[in-house]
Amino acid sequence: MTKFSDLKLGPKVQKAIDEAGYVTPTPIQAEAIPAALEGRDVLGIAQTGTGKTASFTLPMITQLARGRAKARMPRSLVLAPTRELAAQVAENFDTYAKHVKLTKALLIGGVSFKEQDAAIDRGVDVLIATPGRLLDHFERGKLLLSDVKIMVVDEADRMLDMGFIPDIERIFSLVPFTRQTLFFSATMAPEIERITNTFLSNPKRVEVARQATASETIEQGVILFKGSRKDRQASEKRKLLRALIDREGDACSNAIIFCNRKTDVDIVAKSLSKYGYDAAPIHGDLDQSQRTRTLDGFRAGSLRFLVASDVAARGLDVPAVSHVFNFDVPSHAEDYVHRIGRTGRAGRDGKAIMICTPSDEKNLEDVEKLLKKTIPRIESPIATQAEESQPAATETAETSEPPKRTRSRRRKSEPREEAPAPAAAAPAETPVAEQVETAKAEPAEPAEPEAPREKPQEKPRGGRGRSQRQGDDRIVGMGDHMPTFIEKSFDERMTS
Image (cartoon, rainbow, N blue to C red):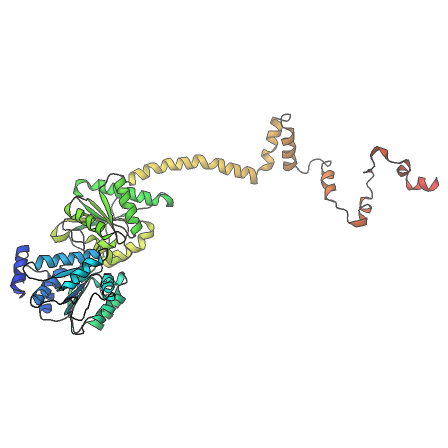
């Protein structure tokens, strides 16, 4: 079995490794470190938690032990997709380079440019940066990349997801062609493969553990959940999360709760805090100082629940995370492995529980297809309560619906049967209402009401109006003052 002492690292680096208590390298470290020490390009493919960071920090420290950096011209460059991952890389350098006089600088967003400029001006051997902040310094004329001898791209597939690939390609064009490149990724998407073919020269390919694998020490489970109503599903889902935490009890010493959207991260964290759970959010829109305080509190144990977006799925190294709750099924199946990889680290036991709504079922199928196995279904802790409340809701619906159906039938299909009932019950009290009801319900009974209704409909047209009323003996318009000659018939007037 290979030991760190067999990898031909520098004596001061080996001393730091021994003090850290490490004896046996991980598979990716055992293969990548010798190739990196030879000056070869390395393409490392391995899942999270396999020791990729030490795979490039250890050989870099050994190679950079000799030499001195010039002002504003770093000797090596490490690119990381998130601030947290960049900070973790910086911590690794502090651990392994404590006996070597190397300077480093961390260029990440949310920190003053002035402090970062001052560090660059003094000259740095190792520059650790996120792509956006690195290009900001370069465009301001505060940084030159012409002396970079070793360039590292960490979590390249995450760079792709976050849209950093154009920035990565530009940075590659700014560093010397003769540099050594160490390229690490958990997956090999077509775009990632294109970059490696373009910018890496005859790399040593190191592939360890299929990306679809998760640690065997992690107990997995999924709850299929559907809200009682669409407008209540979000709140009921948060209630389910609290019930899951309560069911785990003391076994859940701390946990990371993953959400797909930043807005949900804030909502879930606020909801947990409202109900007395010690929780805080972390995502990309928060100020860096707040993110740092939150992470430090979670690592120290003063914060029990960390509600996070996928910004914390990679690069967050907290060895003793007991549980991971996937409040949402991740949109990308690979992210599921990264999320649950935050628990069960270093041989410890862990538990990962996921909540799946009907809209997430397609994503769940993708996750299980990637894992090549079915995630066990577990019973919801609030299922019994929902079943008990369902009959009550059904009874309420049954008692409330019939009156609505009866009213609609009276209006549409049974007007003639129910209209006479009020008339027979109270004929003298509501004569006007009865007449209206009778007129509506039985329009064909007496002939007398029909004549007044028809007469207003007859509209005289010009001079023909009088002729249209022939045959009508009633005289309208003169009243009691009608002249006598008008009352005579035509024949009487002719003979008189």
